[in-house]
Amino acid sequence: MKDIYILGIETSCDETSASIVKNGTEEISTVISSQIDVHKNFGGVVPEIASRHHVKNITMVLEECLEKANMTMDQIDAIAITYGPGLIGSLLIGLEAAKTLAFVYNKPLIPVHHIAGHIYANSLVKELQFPLLAVVVSGGHTELIEMKGHYQFQKLGGTLDDAIGECYDKVARVMDLEYPGGPKLDKLAALGHDTYKLPIPLQDDSYNFSFSGLKSAVINLVHNEEQRGETIRKEDLATSFQKVAVSSIISKARKAIVDKGIKNVIVAGGVAANNGLRTAMKELTDELGVELSIPPMKYCTDNGTMIASAGYYAYLDGRRADLNLNSKSQDTLK
Amino acid sequence: MRLLYIDTSSSFLYSAIVENHTLLAEVKEEYGQSLSEVALPRIVSMFEKTNLSAKDIDKIIVVNGPGSFTGIRIGLTIAKVYAWSLNIPITTIYSLEAMAMSSKKEMVHVPMINARRGYVFAGVYDKDYQEIVKPQHITIEALKEKLRDIPEYEVITNDELEEFPERESYNPDMLKIVNYWQDKEPINPHAVNPEYLKLTEAEESKL
Image 1 (cartoon, rainbow over the protein chains, first blue to last red):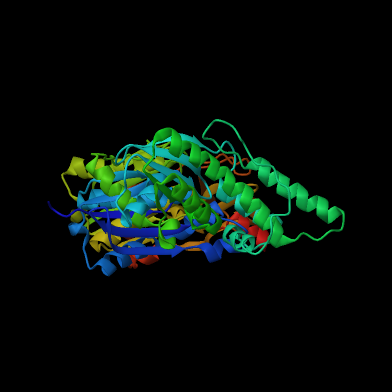
Image 2 (tube, rainbow over the protein chains, first blue to last red):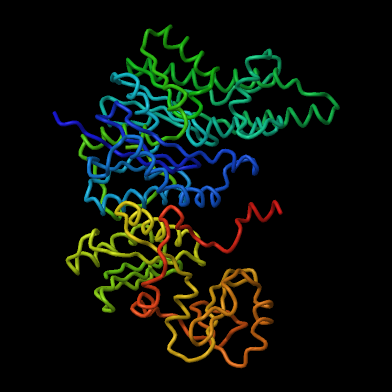
């Protein structure tokens, strides 16, 4: 069978990225231009600034990606693009770039959902086994997705309010940890003891999550301690918070694995880099005897590689978009 | 020489293909909320109409602002990716220059775009389209001050501004625009960027 080369483009938040992947599993070249230092000064991603950087960087990222691969656009079989969800102004830059290349080179355009990208980051490491449970955890998402085969997605549940990564960043901010605070909170959690009592969110029969109550509980706790003139033991608070946040994910994942006869669990998204979650997920899957895949750190953040990989399976599934494809800030994975 | 012109800086999509001082095809369309859906398809439809392919373009002229931030980025991304991918010369002009150029009157031209909160994006050009006041984000008050010593001028805008009740509306003469700038020095596509003429609110609040 002929080899298929997909160019993947991802601009949904604050990384401008392009990548070429062969047959969905072999990374040929990847370029990521991160804006993390730009947004650090503002304590979070500023959408207008992110859009301005994407438009500035886009052709340089594409050029470097092709140069690294030692390939030309003529050798590319199709162009995969994150159409959503994400920041609309950011998404539009990658979208217009992808559509323009599709027009100029007369190549198929493949629309890829950002979460499908995070899931398929795992297929760059190991072949996926079905039925599969994807635990998607990031700054914008907390979802459990069941897959019975390639590119078949069934959302089992998701967060009813804040995403877990968002909750981490907000709690980190209350604790005066520098943006992005989530990873720093994770590091602190390894040093402390579970001494603060926090509510366990949404203990019900659904596959849904809720993190806003937990976030408020931490904020109130910090304010109350401050008012009483007490100093917060940051390590301990981090440990207590992480334990509750992680156990919420684990209990719903356990239910899904058992209910659906899952063979392979994958953890996807930025929070997949969280050590507390990785450890707990390993214990859970060992106990239940299912395969666990966690992508290497480099695939946990946003990148074009995962979009190109997902794009390959979408390509095989016959998915194509016209040049009137639009970006979507919100969209369900189907 | 065959040129492609793109301007998405306002609520209209303006695009044209010009060959040897002849207009082969043009698009003038008010797009509402969905510029990203229509921009490229409308441009492509000009190619279909003229039986041209992407490779048949010798130069691209794109409006890089000022105007709608998102709008500018859409047209500019199309233009710079197009130019970069096929190694086609590309150059940029201001929306305000295109507005002045489209006027048929022999007098000073004051093109402007409402930037809200008492501000406009504006420039001042003499009857030969030479810049008198460079394009900028300016309060209406300060602009009026700059216009005080100019005996006669026309305001060109598609926006309602009560301080300038007499105005000429803008309807681009794309053939004239392209003819005038067709020999403008090309720039590296990587360096083709929007001219917002204004910091983001987040940056302003840090000042």
